[in-house]
Length: 333
Ligand code: KG4
Ligand code: ZN
Image (tube, protein in one colour):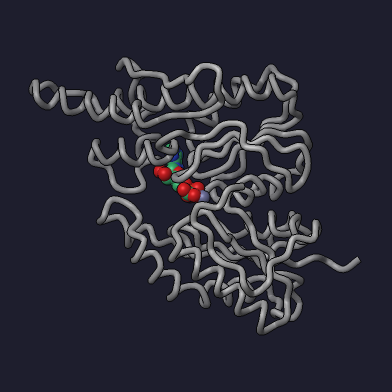
């Protein structure tokens, strides 16, 4: 049987990425052009700047991926592209590049949901065992997704306001740290202790999340200390904030695993890079009969290998788009 080669394209936020997978699980090319430096001075992603960078980078990145894998477009079986959710102007660059290539080379086009991509990043590490539960934590998402088989996604909990990564980035801003703040808070948290009392947004009886109140509590703590002329140890504040976020994420995941009786727990998204979250999850699942999978850091943040990995499964399930494919910024999984 011939190898299945999928070209994945991802442009939903601030990374222009192209990758090629072989048979859904092996990466033969993985190219990511990050725009973080361009957005840093604004303290967050500026959509207009993101779109412009994607336009400049997309062809270069795709050509680099083909070169890295040493294949030509004629050898590619299908093109998988993120159709949403994300920034509309950013998504459109990837979708149109994919459509142009599909048309020019007469290749099937496979639309991929960005979150499905984050989840399937785990399949680049291990084979998925169903039923499974995925904890998706990124700058735009905080979701618990139940999967009973390939391509089937049931959101059992999601954020009602800020995503976990968004809360990290906003708290980092108050502590005068550069964007994206998540890794900086993570590092600082390990130098401090969780001695500051902050709320734990449990939302009892639901698998939903809410981090906006916690974020406000941190901001108020900083402002109140400033007004009283008191010094507050940033490392303790970072440690306290991280402890609150991690407690909630871990407890809800453990509860959902028990209720749904899954075989595997997958962690996905940029916040999966968090050292505090990784070690707390490892500890929570060490005594349980469930396999915990946390992908390496480079697969946690946005990349196109994850889109090719998800696209490969969708391709085999017969999912196709025609040239009327559009970007859908608020796409549901
Ligand atoms: O998945 P991703 O690259 O992009 C989205 O789809 O949103 O996630 C980026 C998010 C940012 O909010 C960033 O601060 C956060 O992931 N992040 C972290 C860490 N590394 C990245 N948050 C906490 N701790 C980290 N070590
Ligand atoms: Zn993402």
